[in-house]
Length: 99
Image 1 (tube, rainbow, N blue to C red):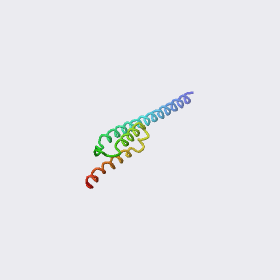
Image 2 (cartoon, rainbow, N blue to C red):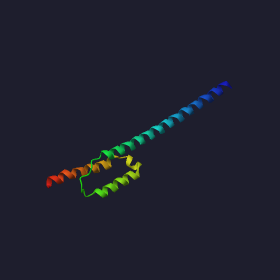
Image 3 (spheres, rainbow, N blue to C red):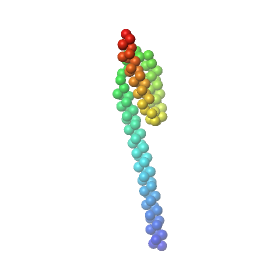
C-alpha cells in the first residue's frame, strides 16, 4: 500500500511540473508580442518626414493605416512599411538635383 501511494505522488508532481512549463512558455510568447508592438510604435516615430508634395502621400498613409489595423499579420514582417518610407525619402533629393 505504501509503495502505491508514493508512485501516485510522483505522478502528480510530474503533472504539476508540466503545467508550470506550459504557463512559462505562454508568458514568454506574450512578452515577445508586447515587445514587437512597442518596436512598431518606435519605428513609426523614427520614420523621416516625407518631402512636401510627395505624390503617393495619401495612398501611403492609408496603406500604413491598413497595415496597422491588420495587427498581427504585420508582425511576421515589420520592415515592409519602413522600406516604403525609405523609397519616398530618396525621391526628395533626386528631384532637387534635377531642378
